[in-house]
Amino acid sequence: MIYEFEGRTEKEAIDRAAEALGLEKDAFDVEILETKRPGLFAKGYVKINVHTNQQTGTPPAEEPAVPSPAASIPALGPAFADPGAQNEFEQKLIDFLEGLIHRMGYAGTISVLFREDRKIGFKIESEFSPILIGKKGKNLDAIQLLANIYAGRLGREDLRIILDSENYRIRREESLVRLAYTVADRVRESRGSYLLEPMNPFDRRLIHTTLNDISDVETKSEGEGVYKQVRIYYRGGRG
Image 1 (cartoon, helix red, strand yellow):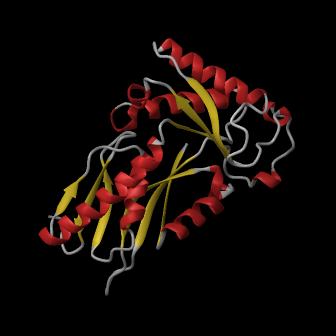
Image 2 (cartoon, helix red, strand yellow):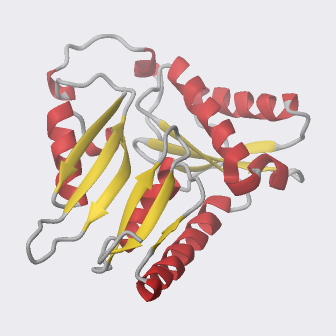
């Protein structure tokens, strides 16, 4: 489900979402749609979309205790621990991902990258990693989506699966931060706007967050579907 919230800051918008939905903040993903800095005669605000697969409207502590398939799954261990599977759930995810890659026609192995309360990361090691990552990470995103769907079928809708290969996620974040600052400088000089390439929600949020503290630059997501574009524009006019 997708819900829209607004606030004067990103934190306020997220706090409102958590209170309205009766969920913990780490139980949903946040996509920033638009940010506006406060001005002399206008208040600033942040508009977000909240993505969650969990039942909303009632705080988790007040929900009746109903047996769940996830109840028999051991809790995740500490981050950056044993890269091998520690329980049946992790082994099933590894088998699923290795089987999926094999059916795509490529060889590769899967290991656990990190473990957190609401997230678990898996790493693909393959000589075909550039293909599995794909242009702008689109193949990696697609495989990750399938992994999250499979995790939900195993009873772990509460757990987000993160997939990486050759440290692509870190390199992508560093590249996007540099891009954000470069384009911000460009629009400040031209006093116009610049529309970035289509990005997934996580990449768009990084752009919005990176530029949120620059007083004369604002950002807004445009388009439909998962892969929207971020427009970066000079605050004095949208060019």
